Image (cartoon, rainbow, N blue to C red; front, side, top):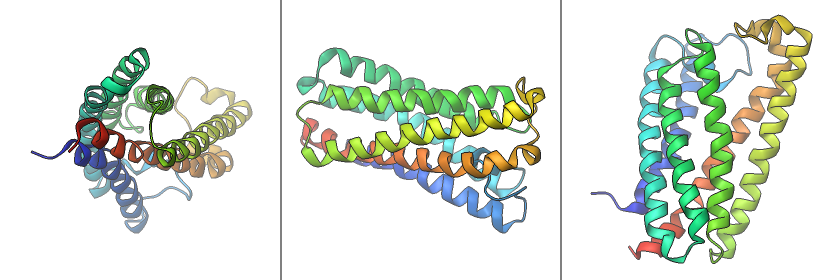
Amino acid sequence: MISNKMATRIGWSLPLATVLLTSIIHIISGNYRAFPFFISEADYPGLERVVFKFGFFINGLILIYVSYVLFNSCRGRARWYWIHISGILGAIVGVNLSLMAIWDIYDHERLHVITASSVFQFGLAWGVVTHLALPNASKFNKKMRYFSISFAFLAYLGMIYSINLGLQEYPEFVEGKWDFNKLQPWINWAAPLEYLMVFSFMMTLASFEDEIQKGVGD
């Protein structure tokens, strides 16, 4: 059995490894359409698709467990209403991450966008709510979350703004079936911001390792 702290560490290190590995494979294989590209574009037929789907599907299940561990180990010293909401939000993030891994952006664009957006939105909410649930957290971890959540929020707004500018230029893409090549001038901004948001979310998850250890005393 792995410790609760180790489960939390896997919860942020596995998606980090998945993002980096699939992106690198996508580039080295020559399958990338343009650079920079969205993370989901690396879910391309080949080795990168195997890594993408396995990594994110398993990580979704792990995040469901991590949300339970956070709730169970910290509820004795947390604001009870916030920690209950945190447990629910974490499970929602995990479910949507696993579904996102199943529905790739090429063959299931609408379902992929819905689940990916849910991961981003509920992930931000999860970080904020869990932070509020732990008023006695260490100053270091609090500062770490101030930094990571702020960057994730700003990156998300910037990504949405960039894509909306592209959709205003090509309103026919609003209903789906995006032409990524035509949208590339806006993806040049949106894609790096997506990576920044994902890395910030992982930093937020990493900040909860010590909180779990403090809660269970392992």
